[in-house]
Structure formats: C-alpha cells, structure tokens
Image 1 (cartoon, helix red, strand yellow):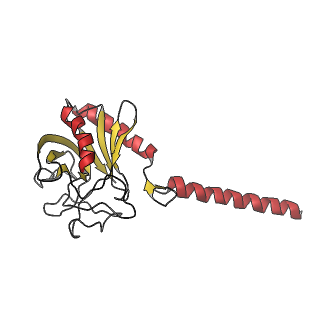
Image 2: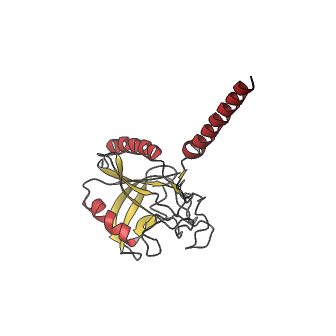
Image 3: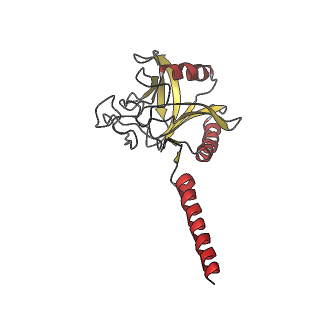
Length: 216
C-alpha cells in the first residue's frame, strides 16, 4: 500500500516537472533560452511568418526568393534580423538590428527588451508592419547606403514621410551583445556596417522589390 502511494507520488512529481520544463522552454511566448539565459528565436514561429510572407510577396509581386524578417519580440542584444530563404525554407543570415528610442535618449539601449511602436511623425519610434524596400540611395550613416522604406499597412504607412529608412550604423555590433542592447535611433532599422555589406548586394541585384516585415 505504502509502496503504491510512493510510486504514484513520484509519478505525479515527474509529470509536473516535465510540464514545467515544457512550458518554460517551448510555450513561453516566442522566447527560448540558451545556457547563459540568452533568448533566441523560435524557428517554427519564424517559419510560419515566412510562409505568410511568401503569400504576400506573390500577391504583391515582390521578391519571392528571399525576404527580411525582424522579430521585435526578441531582446535587441540578440540577432533578430533574419534574411529568409524561401526556396530552402530557412534563415540565410541573421544580424543585430536597432529600433527607435521613442522618448528615451538617442543611442542608448533603454528599451532593449520592451520597444514601443508608433506610426506618428516625430515619435522617434519604430513601426511594425510590412514594408517594400525601394530606392537605394546615399546615406550619411554607416557605409553610406540606405534603402527607402514604403510602409504597406496602417501601422507603418507614414514611414516615407517620417524618413524611416534602412541603413547601417557603426554603433551596431556584428556579434550579439546580450545582456546589453543594440543602440537605438529615431525609428530606422539599423544593422552593422559589415552586415550591410552582406545584405546590400542581394537587395541591389533583386529584380523585384524586397519585403521587410517588422513584427513583435
């Protein structure tokens, strides 16, 4: 009798432990954690976003070979900018990317794990939504290349008038800086100079406009 009770108790403890482990590692929002407690992307969630992105690209006559996905639910000190390869259904490149500082001081990382989004002129915030990357122009920042961003949704349709563009910035690191965050600008998605050197040829040579989707 006592042995049976002990067995049932141990079985219950094991089941509860497994459920807690499962919840922490796989169910808690979009985040998983590495051994040093650094969050990283949930690849299955990203793959679902990519499938939706491909449908959108085909409908809007955008590039259907690759797109750019930016997962703002991730801490800004980890790589959350993904060049997604539609053909192979996987991440081709991943980079750090900065977001807007909003009311915080420029170039700090005070909203590294809780960015605020806005589509309002002068807010200095990033805007979520799908963008079409437009003209390649000269930039005063980074390696002097920028891409005009055209917001395609109600959450980001002021991007052009707000002068929200995609460019590089020497303050952005090539490697993850967690638990620190990536320096924050005035709403533009900014990557490191070396990262821009990797992605720029792909965008420049694309026969169709490239989709950039910023989501949280």
